Length: 510
Image 1 (cartoon, one colour):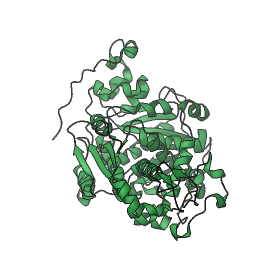
Image 2 (cartoon, one colour):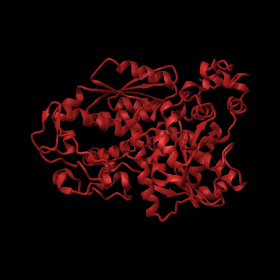
Image 3 (spheres, helix red, strand yellow):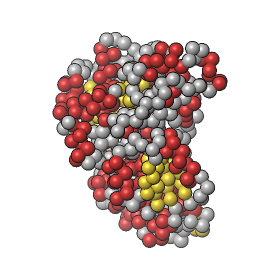
Image 4 (cartoon, one colour):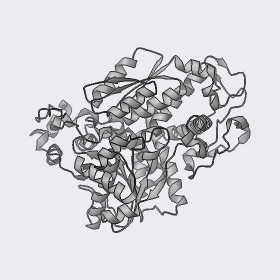
């Protein structure tokens, strides 16, 4: 059943910016096009060089190295808990592969098209397994340290530089036989092997000193699970973040509650409940579901709220992907430099996942990479926030848009203010795609490459068509001097689809 569209008249803007739209928001030409649900390409006039953009972001790059080291420490436990990671020794990573059949059928005549296969990312089959898994692991680790079950992990300013194996010995019983056998190296951010096990006396928690060396597979033991059972993780989600948070929390023995908006698909709710996760359904949009989750966790010290709008832990977990993709590109002999840029097409909802991934990529590849965010025509919240400079101070509801879209993971009306402000100089531009365009690309990818992804993931393919077409015509992003050479490498980040039930897959394909 289709929800009634809200009043198309824009609500009042915050007073500080009211004078920016003296004739009302719809007097702005770009805003008017967005209100008409017009698929468009917008190149960011505020985009700057990477060095300046990183400095202005306010993000400490050390959080990315810290996240990479934490994911490395947990690899033995991940490998034992999730069989689909065992061959890679607990590394949660996806392939990077070419799409020659899709490229030919789509008429992209020059350059190269690559697919980042987060649709088959282990644990939860979406990009959200990057940030979501990391944040829950960070919370679990902090609980274990605070209660004396685990020594505090050794940290280093740059994990790539600590080469002293004697300071953090790996425990033989805690290292899977296949560890390190991943098909692609993790790059700088994942190079560390710190903390597979910690030597006795390596650190203490608030609850006392660890009496012996403890490996991270101990998170499956009775004392750890008893501790986790007394704590809860809460998150608001339209779908895939809730899946990743719920699955990893349940695996650790944590209680989990996922507040899901009206856009969330039933199969995702059913899957979570089958894992013992509490699902709270809301007949409201994503922003209000998040607010409900935040309110539920606010006054309980035993509850951790995963804040998709402002979380540095989520952001850092996503950003770890940057070094890993850089390593995959090197392994495949793909040149990425100023003359051969990489254009990455990132589906965007609230902005946490594409923001973190983009940060990691520009940190690794510098000015040779350009990141375009892709949004549904019904929910172009990041584009609107960047264009107006209001970020989370404006909603697509002020354009009369409902956020009703087949791309449930992107059905967000108000962007992350943290991501918008931090990344405003590093996002090359935004592309909007209609439901029809996204579902057409779901079918096209299946017909050419035999892959089935969610419409939200297929949005990245529509973005390639748009940007590659602009490049062929010699166009640059609207209002900006950013040019995309005709021979650029285009990377579509396929953000989800690996856990789709058969009936949903069939519905997308027909």
